[in-house]
Length: 391
Image 1: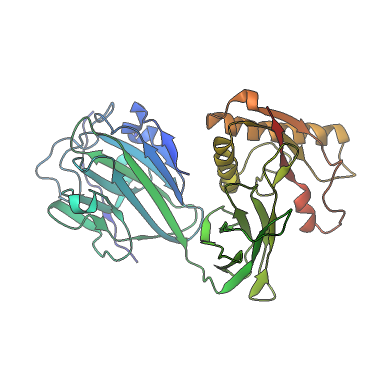
Image 2: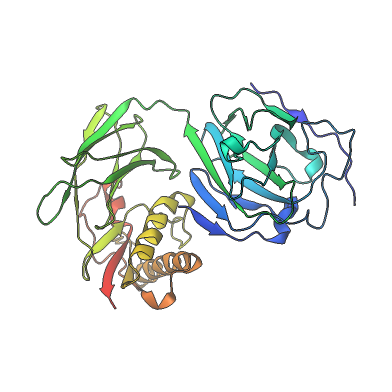
């Protein structure tokens, strides 16, 4: 059980992704929302303290807080599951000195609880990195020479944390922040299998990632050996997604759960990248009867973005599908499936994929992959397909 330091201060009158810092994010109400198990790069350092200097100069303030807020940005992180939270800040220039404080997220600021902080002098032998990670025990690191990292934080699902990052020097050169959440459940199962070329069945040196189905959090990953074989640890009695990817092939995903046996074999045959072939986004999930993309879809969407960035000569046709619900109006299902394809397109546009590369269609429940009355198996019919189209 961690002890928390309560703020008792009075204040004067907020796959790797490139980001720009909004000046509003220098004050708590404008905090930038980040997701765990992702990396974000900011091309420049924060400049100034926003509309309100939430930590004005106060030499009497405890050294576990900032002595003075200078060039700051606020981030907000909501935890998708129980686990151990860590993060790391890597400055582009080792001359920059990033300090930080981590709070429970509440607004106004006076209601927040400080749970970690690090105000140590930048250590150029560590590339001036800082953050929280395993192997370190201090909750709060005060100014001057000292440890660049503080201890990890045990979190629970839906916990909201606020991270205030401050570069004590102006006109910095930017930074990267990576966030990690390690689930607290045991990884006592095993998923293994082979990844091969679909056409010739040749073994492939591919990446295999295992993600939690309900949150999209990366649980483990590995690379196949020269025979195309892989093995990854997995939890028991929890739905997970296994994805095999290779830069020269379309990635493929299988949804599984180790319920009756602690081991399962999942083999992949990856398709080549050419017009007419398609990949299926089984793990782009939507709210029931809506076109709202759920947060656990992030991993598949990011893979699609990366693929489109690697192959700028390919256009895609996004095709939405629903279940063939005999009790639903066919026109409604067609419209719903089309709107879901549009929702994926909007996500791609936000990631700077040109609009002229993307077209959309909705098939409703006309072309199910599986004819079944089993609701779990039938979930495979709820999908978005990405059909490759040459320019």
